[in-house]
Length: 109
Image 1 (spheres, rainbow, N blue to C red):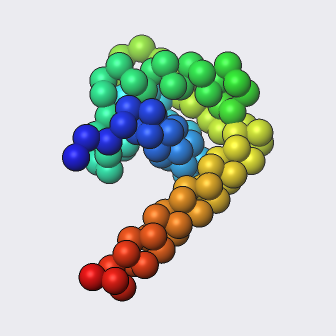
Image 2: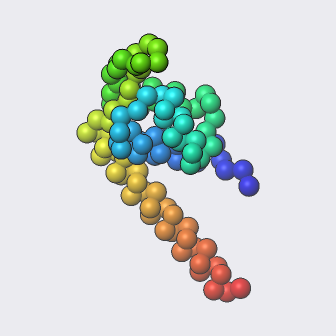
């Protein structure tokens, strides 16, 4: 079953916020972390990160790297943390409601 692109974008946003909340990360590191859990299109992550910064949910800073040029790290803002917590609640409610629907349907089989 193909999951809708819009649905995947919302899930990707939630995953990115949670990962950045755990620890500040740079783009490639985030892509690796996300792809361990969900399939992510190569071009989907950076526009999302730009939008999160533009909307004030994340900030960026440069940090020296031993493996080349400085890396741009993403850090969650207080606003981003509030937004992430609201998204987590929405996700849990959504999963719970879908699970209830599935289980109700199985009672009648």
